[in-house]
Image (cartoon, rainbow, N blue to C red):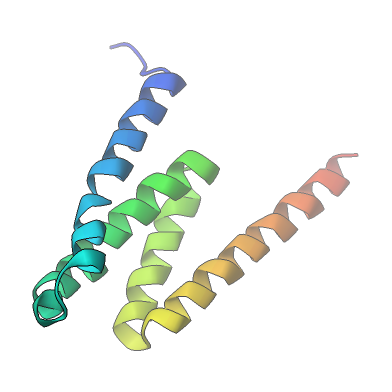
Length: 106
């Protein structure tokens, strides 16, 4: 079996990212009365898939899985604000980890 190239993986992840952004656009531009119909799909399907594909392209699969788990747990337990702050904290923690790792390798 042949290994998929990195360019092919990125292309597939980009298309997944773009396709799952469509429900978010529907959520944003739908009439206010229809928001409850879009909310569960946006919160628990589209945004986690966007996070997974985006973070996978940016930092790898492990980071993407951690980010999605963090998002779903924070949304379920506390809401959007906590979920966004959690992702920001995860980005900062990853950057600190990369800097420490780079300094140790010198």
